[in-house]
Structure formats: C-alpha cells, structure tokens
Image 1: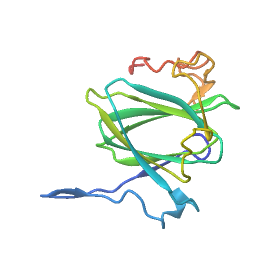
Image 2: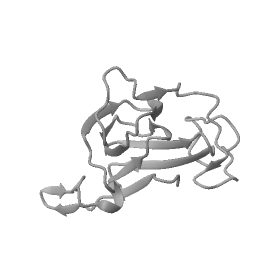
Image 3: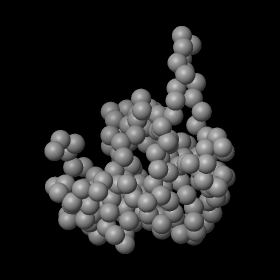
Image 4: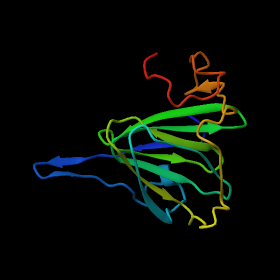
Length: 167
C-alpha cells in the first residue's frame, strides 16, 4: 500500500437486535495518529458511478467508510506512479485513510447505491481552492504498479475504472 494509506477494520458486536460498532475513537493513535476529524460528510452514489480524481492541496486527510453497497477505492501517487486499490463493503466494515498528497477516488461496484461516510481532518473550503480535480477518465493516470504488483495486466496503461473484475 502507498505510504500513509491505512485500513482500520471495525469490530461489530452482533446480537438479536442488530449490531454496534465504533467508527472513530481519538485514542486510535495507530490510525488517526495526531489528526482529529473536523468534518464528516455523507455521499450516496448510484450503481457504477465514478467519483474521481481528487487531490487535497492543503494537508487535508480523508477517511472513507462504506455504510451501504460496495466501492472500489483507488489512491494514486503521481510521483511514483503507484496505485493502491481497495475494495470496501458494508459487510467488511472498515475505514480507509487517504493522505492529502495522493490522487484518489472511488467507483460503486454494487448493484445498489453506495453510501460512503467520509471525514476530514480539516474543514473544506466552499470555494474549493483546497483541492484539485481531474476527470475520472484522465488518460495520464498510468500506474506502474497496482498494490505493489508490476505484473498486473492493468499496469503501464491509462487507468480503466471499468476493467472487468476477473483476471
């Protein structure tokens, strides 16, 4: 995984009523380090929708938690051309930490809409001067490695969010 990208699995306490899980605790120093989330947002995206590519310019760190559906989260380091790909679902409840210096985005891969809760360690500016945006199909996103694998058949080609899941 790219440096600073972390996954925090969440324990679910299940009983006959449903389940309970903790999504954020300030004493999770291994995950949040010294960052305290300052803003939390909820996104609903319809099946197969792609929300990419974004990069934060002023040190904003994002934390993504999929509450409904399934998404493929991708994080790209423009300097090294490394890409990290993470599948996140409501069945495998986890939070994905994305540092500010990486391009990132996600695609809904479930047949139903996905709900993604995301928090940031800084307040977002309404004028959007705190981030850059590239088109989701930007042909200059060309990974040299995907999840540390050079032999992945998707490397050395423009990133294709629609690549079939089978290998």
